[in-house]
Every structure is written in C-alpha cells, then in structure tokens.
Image 1 (cartoon, rainbow, N blue to C red):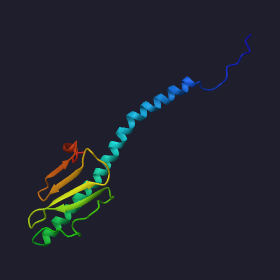
Image 2: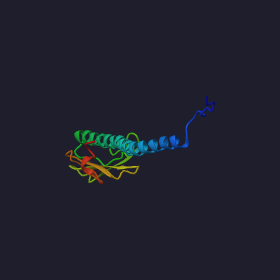
Image 3: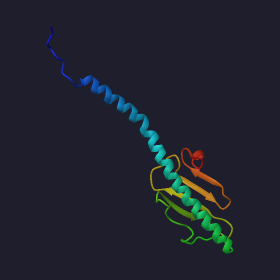
Image 4: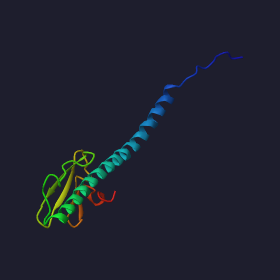
Length: 131
C-alpha cells in the first residue's frame, strides 16, 4: 500500500497555460472592444452634426440665409466626444465638420454640407458614415 498522497492544487505549468490562454483571448478581444467604443463615439459626432444641420435648416426656413451664429453652430457634440464647427456659411451654403476629441485614425473628421453630402477623412473614411 502506498501512503503517499499527492498535494492538492495547481502546478506551475497548469497555471502558466491558463495565463497564456487568457493572454491570447485578451489580445483577440481588446481590438474589437476599442473599435466598438470608437464606433459608439462616432455616433455622438453624427448626432452633433445632424443637430446642427437641423438647426441650420430651421434657421433658413425662418430667414433668408444660413447662420454662422454660435446658437446654430453648436460647439460640442451631445456627449462631448466631438467638436462641431460650421464653415463656408453663406446665404445658400454651409459645411458642418465634426472633429473628434479622442484619437480616431479611421475617421479623423465627419463632414456634411447643405445638400446632405456626407464625407469623412481618415484611413477608413469610406465606412465612417455607414457604421
């Protein structure tokens, strides 16, 4: 009869395997998470731009031209992730630009004009308005 009893617990090798698996899962999940957060913040920029666009059209309906006033060109986006600015404001045209207050290499600016033309700059500018 063998009376030697193996101690309960984990070996160092088992613990290292678990740590390695956690590291692999984290390296896969973290980029997806950061992209999701950036897309959520882009929705804030889009909301800010569309809010200014609505204010411009409302102003134009009551006046003879678009406005560059601060009351129409709201500076921060609703959640504050973007700075909204108006440019090229004339009697018949305007351009609204949203610039992120965070690092977003894929979509560095979101732009819309009086005709509803949506453009963007960045490494993935084709998908900035779609996602």
